[in-house]
Image (cartoon, rainbow, N blue to C red):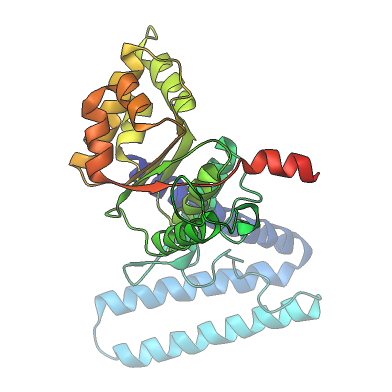
Length: 328
């Protein structure tokens, strides 16, 4: 089962749980009313009997079928009215025995006329945001929280650009990227020194993609690779994590180069990059390393793919974390 199928299954299971809860509440109320109101049980029995007889007449047909159906429907209507009267006389609302489904549109089924209901997408989004929250706090990491005041409005001597203007363009590009995100979106490489907002914008994109119901996996290179290594070298080898990272709609590898270097980690990074590019699935990678450092650590094959197949975004400025510490 792919990560997207697991997400779909988890959402449908939650809807089934909600639907069953709504039904169980009604059954509990019926049991209580049967004990409290003697006539209530009789009305319920009448409704059940007339509905059963009506179904049999419809199936069997025969002479005077229409008259029999009309008579039974009239009897059924009287029983329903009596039931509502009994509820009202005993202080219960008319809809007391109607299941209170969480979604009034699909009644917690997840589909309406063969199409996915909005509640299903909302559940998937809620679950994905919860999973992202486990990997990294999301508070303060939206596009609206990204402040350009920490970037200089003077031309940088080394690059010849104004950091504030340059970062404003990157911010708007990432916002546009997130708004139109699909499983066929471009892969991005965030380059630059530490503390320039690479993690912030990665998480902002991740949240927007998750809100659309896409399966997003976020983590530092160290976190992803530690889990891959743990599963690979365990007594009971498992490819669960690798399968998820290869198949998810958006994979975010933050802080590439922070992991302990080894032949295994280098091979895994290459596999993730190469396989996802081969299937046209987007990945966002951020790193503090230079091109030369990337090549020394991961070989020229990896650098070639990052340079040619990823959209490279260079982050400029001074360490924002240090500025905030000084301001504080």
